[in-house]
Every structure is written in structure tokens, then in C-alpha cells.
Length: 131
Image (cartoon, rainbow, N blue to C red; front, side, top):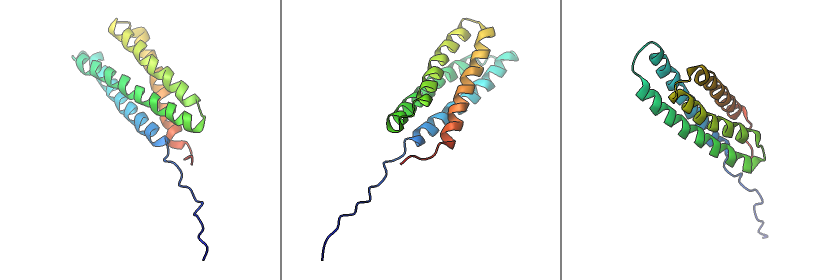
């Protein structure tokens, strides 16, 4: 009887799942930011919640950046990491503009951050699983 070694190698775990999780969390935080911004616009005092949401957005987009970099290292697909880096940096610029009262720039930049995050989320859930 000859023994043969099983040559089937298990595929490494996918790195797209952390990207999906971080993108989904970022979208939830963005939803909170839009809700709290709306409350501010109608005169309610929601700046504390909006400020806390800004910190949460920095954290979640930072996680999204880390996840896309790890995914890029595995797949050699780097545009998601570049977009995530731009979104992450823009969250700080956008928060600084909001703190300084420059709403005319703060709001459009929020839309850019949202578009980048939505794009990454859509891509991550449509991306094929890579072995």
C-alpha cells in the first residue's frame, strides 16, 4: 500500500471580510452623522453627539484603511487602500472645518467622504472571494 500525501491546500481566509465589516461600520457612523447634523440644522443641541460621531468616524475609516491595506497585500489590488487613505485623511480635514464653523466647506466634504465610503462598501460586497 502506498501512502500519498493530500496535495490539496486550504485557501487562506479571505481578507475581504474585514473590509466589509469596516465599511459597514463606517456607513453606520455616517448615518449617525447625518442624523445628528440634521438635528443641529433645526436648532437642537446635538453637537456633542455629532462630535462623538466624528471620532467614531475617524476610528472606523482608520479600520477600513488597515483592512484595505491588508487586502491589498494579499491581492495586489491597491486602489481600495488608496481610496480608504483619502477618505481617512478627509475625515480629519472635514472635522477641522466643522469645528472652525466653515459649514460651506464642511458639508460638501462630508458628501465626498460619504461617496468614498459608499464606493468602498459597494466594491467590497461585490468583490469576488479570492483564494
